[in-house]
Image (tube, rainbow, N blue to C red; front, side, top):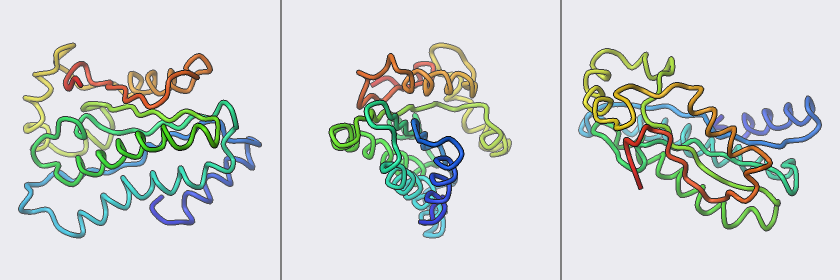
Amino acid sequence: MSTVDGPKTLVESAVQEFGRLDIVVNNVAIAVNKPFEEQTLDDWDLLVNINGRATFLLTQQSLPYLTKGSGRIVNICSASSRGPPPLQTIYAGTKGMVDSFTKCWAKELPPKYGCTVNAVSPGPTETEGFLAAGEEAMRILQPTIDATPAAKRMGKPDEIAFAVGFLCEERASWVNGVHLAVNGGLHID
């Protein structure tokens, strides 16, 4: 997704299959959890390209095909962009980049494309990727999970999907520029 051809091919395939493009959800991401001193330029390039560049490119490639007047763009940020934990210097920074994209695009794109642009920021979520981070990462994360006010657990993918779905509904046509935190109150703006 971080190449010019990847997002272009995805968008063209979707338009060919469905005839139009109503919703863009920028959900591609990767995390590297290491002490700052151990993070490398290779880590930097990987995360910036996947988390930032892919979001930029997919959105840019989607705009000519986005349904005018009702299109939706939802960027998946992260609680880490607003309340970064240790070990996530680059990841939190790239998700902050996506947060800033959302703010800029929410002002710039709706007048041109008749769309809305919003963000969803999950907290720790029970995904295959998150659970594959290993025991050490989970040990470090446990105090954060224990501090979550709504419940001392990780979020579930369907809870995140519900928030994204809401922002894509026709009834959400007046919701633009929102950063919806879906993290059990872990980080409150």
